[in-house]
Image (cartoon, rainbow, N blue to C red):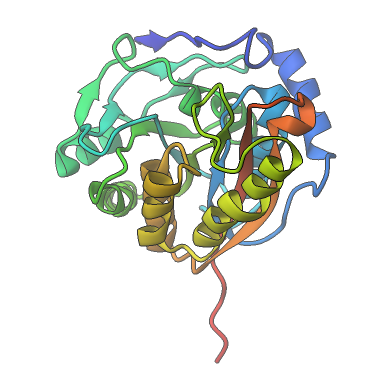
Length: 294
């Protein structure tokens, strides 16, 4: 089977399984820990694990802890939406093969990948041609650890009107194949400071407060409310979501799976780990199915 080698192991996250597992065990006990609920999808950050791995780990662990996927809570497929893309870019799908992780390879579900690519007119790429993207790869050790038997469909989603359709059609393709699934969208938040050419609130504590309490806060509100129009506008107009297309696809996929609300798990910035004039925000969101009250 063709395999995509991990490009970021040993730099952005540990290169071997034992070291990854030690980090995962530590992450699970940090800050808010994991959440319990009927979660079908989530939003994760994608910086190096030292900065945002804890949030991504705990979102994915929370998804694995829910129990309505198959006879024993088994999850067959994880859809992964990510990539840094422009509105006019075509969506990308890794259509075959496997992707290396320190815990073993994750195999692409070729049937769902092919059906989805055909439905949305996506460019289908093999493992060698699919881009080395931290938005996807940084999640894969967590996916393999918490969903050891699941297949994956990795996809790049542009921030355009296509994103909503992609999320819905991805779920339809999986359900037609009789698969239980979870969906993950990957994005970081405001990239602030001279390193990123974005400093509308000046410098120092005032800038950090603005990013946390204004710019990132309104994007988090849109994600929790599952408001796809506002999510897309926030990312494109306020630069507080670097992959808004992936977020929109994940929200609509979760909604197609019955989710009706988002829950904010955690938030931090790189400034907390490495203080400086340039920093990035990171959030974790879970999408929950809530039984109707009669």
